[in-house]
Amino acid sequence: MIFNRKIPSAWLVCVAVAISSAGSALAHAADDSADGPAYGPELQGFNYPAPVEQFEFTSQQQTLHMAYMDIKPEHPNGRTAVLLHGKNFCGATWETTIHRLSEAGYRVIAPDQIGFCKSSKPAQYQFSFQQLARNTHALLASLDAENVTLIGHSTGGMLAIRYALMYPHETQQLVLVDPIGLEDWKAKGVPSLSVDEWYERELKTTADGIRRYEQTTYYAGQWRPEYEPWVQMLAGMYRGPGKKEVAWDSALLYDMIYTQPVVYELGQLQMPVLLMIGDKDTTAIGKDAAPPEVRAKIGRYPELAKLTARAIPHVKLVEFAELGHAPQMQDPQAFHKALLDGLAVIPTNQ
Image 1 (cartoon, rainbow, N blue to C red):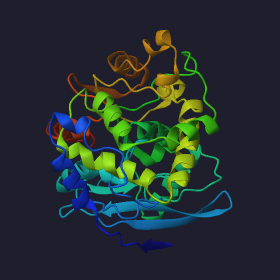
Image 2: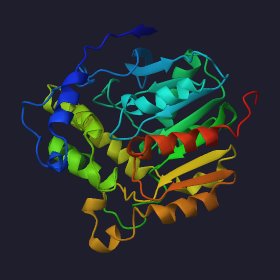
Image 3: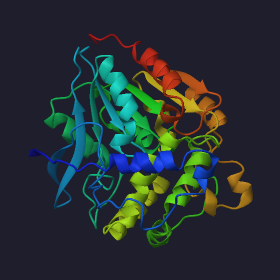
């Protein structure tokens, strides 16, 4: 069953926060007070850049719903791009990419995975990349979307790799944007955290903490007002009535990411792969809990990019020397030119 849900707008509130906090003081000014926007556990109150629909399905003896946007282009080129968001992102954070791909003729489908954003937050769920891939595959089947181009960012890159390995004949092309999972953190010495420990950490999430982390990791030390709505998007769920639900599912998801590496299977990817890396990225799960000697050797993306490119049979590597973990947001013009150029290598009639 697919149904529509209308979502009240809070976008202007977020933009107002962003504008009033512009400049270098932004990283320290607006933070964690109850005066910031508060959203529901399924991000109720936060507006998306396109109509949000819900795909209802049964999984692990539960009825769940998966939010998604399905944007049809004015001048179709016959191809479908599926955008897979990262751990601290949502379908909405692909806003600029959605517009650019749609203008170029792509049908764009951008889901929120179970446990994230506007989708279900089950209290008990065996989270795995295989399960999320199956959920996504079921969604795409319901929309008659076949032979897709997957574009996965961050944790969405790990999911995109798993999807492509499970459904190789239905994956026309794979695009990995600063994917995490290009190394096995556990094997490199990052200590294991229990789900309960992750949960306690997540309960302490604040806007200021999100902002400082994103400035350092996502934007290579830079900050601009247009990044602030995405801080408030996340922080708002932790200010809202569903804080514990959001924190619990986030803890389960962190455990999934840490325990399910994909790096050992990169050589099995047979479809064309576009690997897009911001060289200033330093992301590594559990890095802050690791001893200094371990922190020094993980999250080194210029090295990881080259190792990954050597491991994947049919790959094109694009590096952005001065960008961090989110090049699509930090330099949209450069990123989208490289993305569209990379997508063009696949014939539209393939």
